[in-house]
Image (cartoon, rainbow, N blue to C red):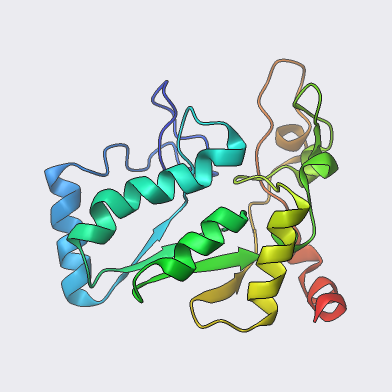
Length: 193
């Protein structure tokens, strides 16, 4: 489940252009109900379109709480690539059926690694992902949770491999999000754990 941008394009997840755009439709509610009965997982990439990247994750999680989590109490929900302290705390406080994935690069990177904080221009496309890496506070919280082996969190990697021209496009073109963390996964985990 990836939210669309205001223009109608789902851009927060690689290859999401054919994804679901109206997660509140009757058809989707029936799908969620069926998934709940079958014990299936709903994987959600939590980013609210039109909201600044620092707040987009928690904004989308709160939207999910307002109806998906409330209506489908037994639906198993996995928030993908949790990147913020607020998002992690949301999952900790959520019902037992709500869990999350933490990626290696969200334990390592902060905003200044990929973006000029004054202009908000992407300066290192290879370290730009969605949801993007944020602050040292976020890293501290995510590491604390990851190293505690909390049962509501698991490890994830970002396998959104893109051709070089998608990561380093011509002027005026969008950068494809995704950190190829799977390439350095084991050394990063060994160093951290």
